[in-house]
Image 1 (tube, one colour):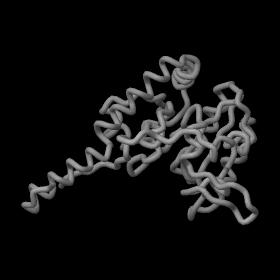
Image 2 (cartoon, rainbow, N blue to C red; image 1 turned 180 degrees about the vertical axis):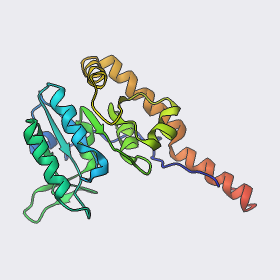
Image 3 (spheres, one colour; image 1 turned 90 degrees about the horizontal axis):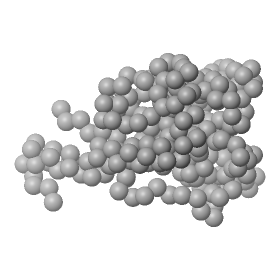
Amino acid sequence: ATLIPNVMEFEKPPPGIDDYNCDVRETLGIGDDQLLLLQPTRVVQRKGIEHAIEFAARLERDCVLVISHAVDDEGYEYQQRVMQYADLLNVKALFMKKIIATGRGRTAAGEKIYAIDDVYPHADLVTYPSVFEGFGNAFLEAVYFKKPIVVNNYSIYSHDIKPKGFEVIEMDDGVSSQTLEHAERILDDPAARENMVEHNYKLAMEYYSYGVLELELKHIMTTFLGVRAQ
């Protein structure tokens, strides 16, 4: 079997802040002096969102956790538990499924709908504390938008992604003091943060870009089908 990884178009620079999405923080009620922690996932138990809430609480900074996607088909019990946990730890957590979607648009009431690509440029840090994943698309998205990432050491990450040398703020099924100290250093040191995200982007270009997909498909066509790919 030939394994072809998930890919993104790293050859194309990520979109930034424009006339449409420049008001994301204002719409979400997040001040310029507050940290925007983005949890770019659905609200399901395997995403480990309670770890993101604990991280936000223990960071001891003025921050807001934005959970971007809907509950979907796994029920609302976990969301209720997450909301109660956020209240217990005094963390401002926003569940933004109504105004964040796959593309830009308007609600029935005329409110602006943002794509997830509109929110990433405003994030100071991405939380990705999943317990398990098939791969980790949100990980690649965060790398693409050049954001530091808090990542739980889930199995696919540990075996397939981490060995390639990505630099992240890591946790092992729980928020440790080391996790918090690393996050503090990255948040307080712009140069270290820039080095981290640029390093990750270059690695993603090498392993998870459209160029990688093209080479793998050409190899399959040539080797198994006897077709010389152009």
